[in-house]
Image (cartoon, one colour):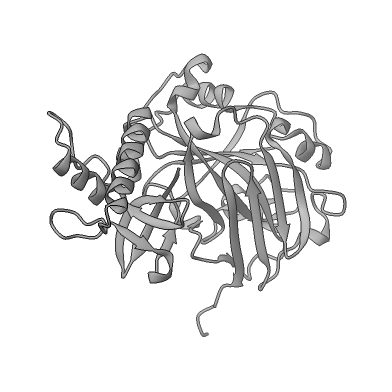
Length: 325
């Protein structure tokens, strides 16, 4: 199940992509399903956005599967799915659909630094004693239909592939043993940063200038529910720029895993449905070690990221157009 945010003719939709590469607006489809299959006390508006979907947990996944079965039965009868109101909820990719980042607006974004053994090794640093986390804001997010943006103020742009978990259940003081109950699903994250701005000379690490610029974190292309992923360790991961592999490994390389991270952060932070936890970068393959000049991105590059059981995220890179003097 591939959960997505998308627009068609500037109208927002929450839904999913089918195996036949069709887009379903789950909000409208759910209303139609309950119109034909009424259930006492059921809420036909429960799929207005991904946050509401996540709040429903495993029940949302089960209901979506029922909706898919309903659509398939109707299609076998020669019927094109439309709601009782006449509103469409089944779309083709070629109709001009634009995929957005599958992240709820205003969600909190937490990114793990130095969280894989291979990445710590290439930095020649000791393993961290506890999760080392920084935050991003929505200005840095881009979706699958947009490019990652290079700002000319930074001279050493670099990109990293990360597994990202999406929170589905509100919680604070979450015990590690129950942490996975708070995860809704997983997606792919691309973390673009500027090494020269992040590490300015002999000064302290500057996360805001290094990792906070507009258009520097891609998330997507969809969220896969955790029920379909199962155990997230190990999942194979690969990052290519052009046709060249820059990172290759799997999620078993992570030092701190979701239960430890959520238990640590939730001591003082309330997690809410839609929050994102990006688990950190792997090390580079030989030739693309941390700090190597070969890691610099350039306008025109094409980034291709893949994670087992989730899929593939392809992003172009473009230079930011500066305003005229």
